[in-house]
Length: 172
Image (cartoon, rainbow, N blue to C red; front, top):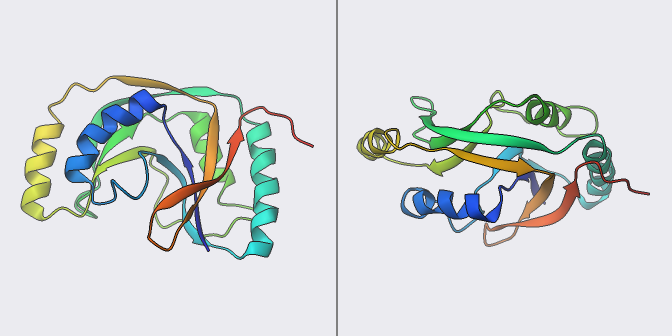
């Protein structure tokens, strides 16, 4: 089965981001706005329980933190993806790094750039127009982060939460 590890922003932040995504993001209906901590990976049912235990440990060792989002950027020319830049926060970087080691599959394609995608799979002209328009917007978003989620992909390509992990929460 295909899994990923993400942080979902709060509902008010998701609503604001979705105002852009519903027009420009081809994956709008497949997954809510999110920060990807670990990109999609394949793992069998026997291995997922080991990863769940590891994720509980990581969450338990992590304190809640705030993220700020205040800039539109792009991954062009690598891809015509436009995103909201999530300012680097050491705890966020540490989380992503922990999910690239140990029992986790090594599948990191690109360096970790905290972001929330708002447009993707655009033609060159669309990308140029949309990016030119969006980068002029004054975006000032702050959001407390106190959990992450392992998600899995259904047969219809929609991603859904498999389990959530609250920061600093003791488990047995």
